[in-house]
Image 1 (cartoon, rainbow, N blue to C red):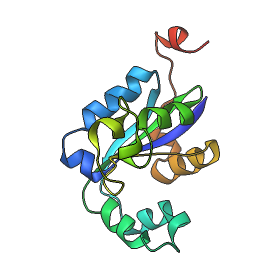
Image 2 (cartoon, helix red, strand yellow):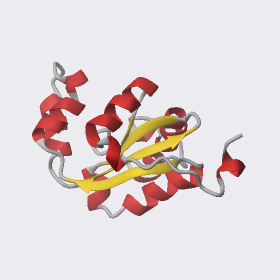
Image 3 (cartoon, helix red, strand yellow):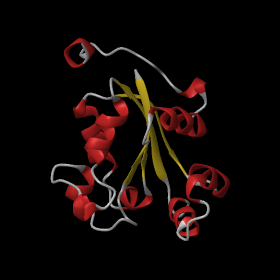
Length: 149
């Protein structure tokens, strides 16, 4: 089972979209194994966005993600990365398909509501950055045989 980190970003939390976004991942069949509301520290934000450190928008990314509480979620499932990213939609909301989170609720790249890990390796790293292993509960739902082969 793959793991992915989802961050429901400040704009989504402020707009009251947390429940709707969470519902979409659960409806897709992904299993929540960790979830918490946090205020991201500058140090954690810089670590999370380190890949963009040399880009001109790095400072604004860090300022944005630390500007308001976020909900961080660790999800688990078969092809969790691809399934989550398909549910989220394209980074640019105007190019995101209708029916995706960004396609339905966002208009600008800088306010695109949600982050999802982009690879299995980054999913493992990002989940570990935001959750201690003791905060994760890998469990089986009664519906899992109807979702996973």
